[in-house]
Length: 264
Image (cartoon, rainbow, N blue to C red; front, side):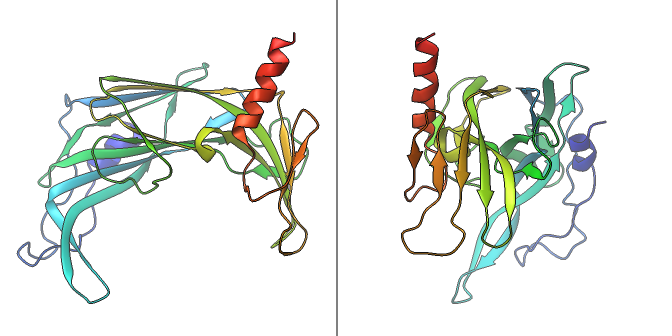
């Protein structure tokens, strides 16, 4: 039994409920039918990267929760349950996979709302001593109209049972001084590192990050807080840019790589 299924069958803590749902005696657990419909997620990882545990959220229209605004007025919202689920590596291959129930059952009739997929550098692995894993890449997949815990940028709406995501990623080595010295191995990618899809019908999800290991951008942060002093990004074509950006210019990285490939 995988981590997700084991968790789904466990009891959960009492939610903050509407007054007409009494106490904590009610069963808020998840109990998906063994033959229930699933979303199958497959990730093909470059050797240098590794997946983070999936961040999974289910919602319930039955077991609701109450939130209050600044004036203490109560509002009833759908109940929600979130947990992490570790992907399983497929033997000695580069594939990782997981299966998540669409309907997680139980008295609350939990239904899958969204999944957040994260990738990052595998450390240690080809880097100098002292370099740690930093900012990675994040893919947010929504199965309803609700916001995920992370909501960044525009939403790509996908229709159909298959969702295939193949995207370019570049190594980004950063050096910072303020609030403690650190050198990190990050990833530069489309959407500032965040991609969001609304794929309500998706049942087969394939994600393949393409890592261009030989096209590296580096950055050096200011040593002191000085107005007008920004992070300096050193690009593989020899150019240096310093402006308001906190991340490398992904479109510039794409152009540099494509130009280099065209000249070969």
